[in-house]
Length: 107
Image (cartoon, rainbow, N blue to C red; front, side, top):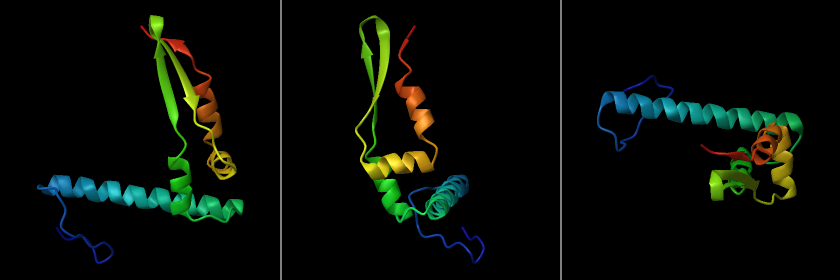
């Protein structure tokens, strides 16, 4: 499948034009997200590549534990200083604080 001269497509493990189009769409969205991440890092003055930021955030884990009587509790892994700073720059901290503080009983 050919797109403009701006995007080249190499063989992939999808079979239909629809699957290829969807794959390309997801790739472009991922590139856009990486570009936005790089811009936010630059604007904040944090000297870190987008790729390193993703690797740092990949190490932050949220773990949900299901206890007796179907009670769900969330915990975050410990974060280093870079991860904390990234969470603040990307405004992820309030989201995770809300999730970690959200202990609820499941039906």
